[in-house]
Amino acid sequence: MNSATPIEKLLRDPDANGVRVEIIDGLPVWEASPVYFHQAEIDRVRSSIKPLEVSFCEHLTNVYFRFKDGSLKRPDIALLPRKPLESEMDSPLEILPEAVIEIISEGYEDKDLRLAPGFYLTQGVKDVLIFNPRAKLIWHHCVDGVGRFNSPQAFKLECGSECVV
Image (cartoon, rainbow, N blue to C red; front, side, top):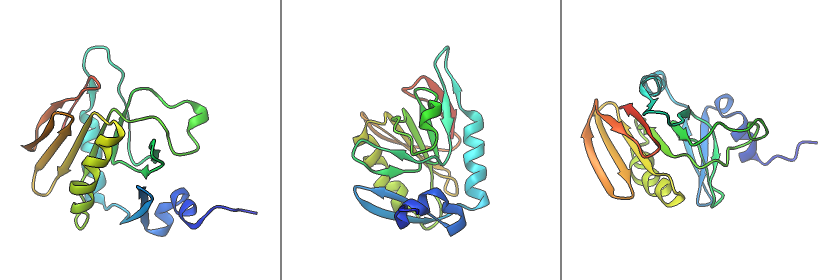
């Protein structure tokens, strides 16, 4: 008998339901599954990510992370300090991403611009990039503050990687 809650079932197969759900501070946040344009932008940015010198550079897309406060988020792109262990791969990752890049989808600007940066920074993520591909604007949030840039822009991240957004 399967005792998974309805939200846990959605987490396991979000695309079959047409929605993605994240749990931030105990509250579910719903979002439609991404469209082609959104995914193409993720792929373009991911293809630019590379390590500076000899640093490690593992990056994933649309993977659930469980944060120290119990929140579940699914960043568009997450840069990790290490590769997940095989034993960690069948549940939300509990590795703290070093950097997160969110691509804004139409209709979800508030979620990405207002909720995401503060949430990630309070959890300990060092670099948070929020990219609006239609407006060609990027916000770079870090412990030192926030900067606004036009795209394309190259970023050197605290984790020792660089990317072009």
